[in-house]
Amino acid sequence: MFAALLDAARNTPFRTPFTRVQCDDGTVTPAEKAVVPGRSVQAAASREVEFGSNEFFGLCAVGGILSCGITHTAVVPLDLVKCRLQVDQAKYKNLFHGFKVTIAEEGARGLAKGWAPTFFGYSAQGAFKFGLYEVFKIQYANMIGEENAYLYRTWVYLGASASAEFFADIALAPLEAAKVKIQTMPGFANTLRQAMPKMMGEEGITAFYKGLVPLWCRQIPYTMMKFACFEKTVELLYKNVVPKPRDQCTKGEQLLVTFAAGYIAGVFCAVVSHPADVVVSKLNQAKGSSAFD
Image (cartoon, rainbow, N blue to C red; front, side, top):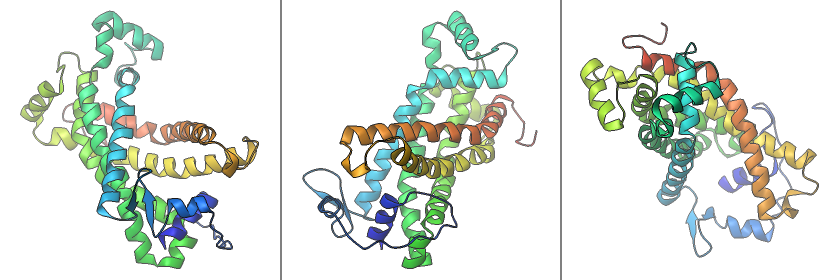
């Protein structure tokens, strides 16, 4: 069954959740046989990992840690200014003015504030998101049966991504709350080790999870949009931009298409998730407030 799902994902990326697809003639190239022999995937040139095994899920989780933790930490300066724009537009008038004010007041090192909760928070989120996505994808496919899982695979992907993000945000919420307080409340704390005990002492455990609901409202649509938009963008790029079929492209050319599709999908994800992102920043800045407030 999973070989069919993988084949469907390769040949016909996302269209709509209602699209019915037709099976192909079953032809498998030598390269495809090398990648997925007996429901296994290549983790390295020397060995293979069985698809759906605990090792497979573990590798997906490690991939999530590396992709989410490293990338979010790399853009901490931009994230810091963004959060300050969201909570104090009178002081930080626009992006460039925000950078200027931050550097003038705190120096260049001030742009790195909040890197620790960002790294640990989004590493945990990435592990749950990518690891559980594969777990839920398999479980939902088994629940609805092989044929339905193939015909309506978009629902499987969207449902699995939403379910995985639900748990991923529970892991992220405490560190996201600490990050926002460090970045937007001058004098509150400069490090994660200072922020966490102070938050617990002032507001108790609720300080870490009062932003969970708007975090769900931000991240779940974000993740669903990310998977759907990425796959559709890849399809459109190969159809309308790349001058030759995908199987004739080099690894470098395929990587470039993947990067471009990821960037475009990220733009749409940001548009979808931005309103809830503002609420998260406001909530973690204002003590005693609720999401409705």
